[in-house]
Structure formats: structure tokens, C-alpha cells
Image (cartoon, rainbow, N blue to C red; front, side, top):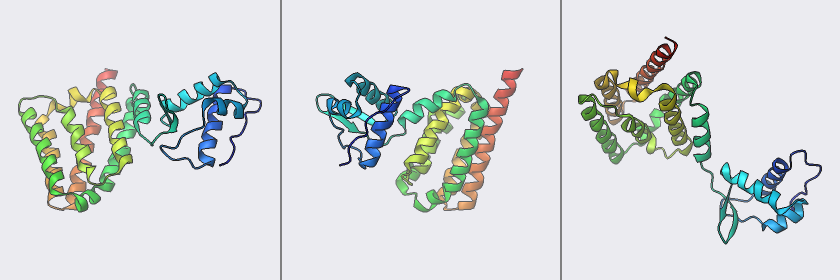
Length: 237
């Protein structure tokens, strides 16, 4: 086990302690669930107070690197998108331009990866997709918003790929998009058309028709772009 490096001439002590702890984790190849030494040992090795170590640990907890288990100790935490989701969605909250750029990234990712869903999707996933699109249809006929179903649809569409990064990006997109664009109110100006988009995507996937699935998904994202543009015009009017 490599020794933790002591702090020297720290301009910002809490930042320097964080970096030292990061380096210790990386150099010793610690994995999720591995413990860190006690605070007293870390403070001694770093040449700082226990309060400084405690503050650094709290900061690393806030970004999902460490976790404190009460009465046990501090451990390396399993990677999670949650801190990124919480901060990025909040940061994008007031910027339609950023949300539009995020929409474009999502479009490229989903259209580019839909072929894997066509190859891998099973009957259980198809049944779940059809169930959520049926709920969309029922809400559309009552002229109701179906924001939750819309988000669930995109999660289910790629669930079979078991791609945590893609799942995380989908959640980031929806959190930021609904907050910034007021999409929940605008998307259903033609709710049956929005439902039909999702229905056609599912049926293309069920038919194992990659090109049709790509085309339908791309057209769906063009519709989302129109919603962003409409909201931008309403804000500037």
C-alpha cells in the first residue's frame, strides 16, 4: 500500500486535502467498497487538522466519490450519475440554448444506438413499451399531459442495452428540458400526434426494422426542436 502524500504549502487547504485523498484512492487502486484509513491517520499523514480532513471527506461525498457509514468508517463509493444529474439539470435550468444542445446530443445518441435495441429487445420490453404508449394514447384522448410516460418511454426503449451512461443522460435531459422549456405544457398542443410518434417507434422496433426505427426517432426529435423554438418565441414576445 502506497503512503498518502503530505500536504505542502496549501493555498486552499480544503481543495488540497481533497486532491490528496483523490490521489491516494487512484494510486492505491481502491475500488467501490474499499475503506479509507481513519480520520486521525489521514490528518497525521497529511499534516493537517482532523476538521480539514472531515471537510474534504464531506466535499468528496457531495460529488459521489466517498460515503461515510456511521460507526464504521469512510469508504469509496460506487460510481453513480446522481451527483451529475442533480447539478447539471439544475445548472441548465434557465438556458434554452443549453437544453437545445443537449437535445441534439440525445438525438445523435438515441438514433445512433437504436439498432442495438432492435437487435436486443425482448418481448417483456416490448410489452412494457406498448403499455406506456397505451397510457399516452388514453391521456392524449383526454387532452392531458403525459410527461412522466414520455420519460419512461425513452428509458424503456434502451433498457435492454443495460447502458448506465445512456440511462443517466436520458434522465439529465428530461430533468433539464422540462424545467427550462416548459415542455410539459407545450408538447401536447397536438397530443395524439405526439402519442403516434411513440407508437410508431415501438412498432418499428417490434418489426426489427432498423431504418424505420431510426427515421421515426429522428422525426420525434425534430418535433421536440419545434417545441423549444415555440417556447423561445413565446419568451421573447
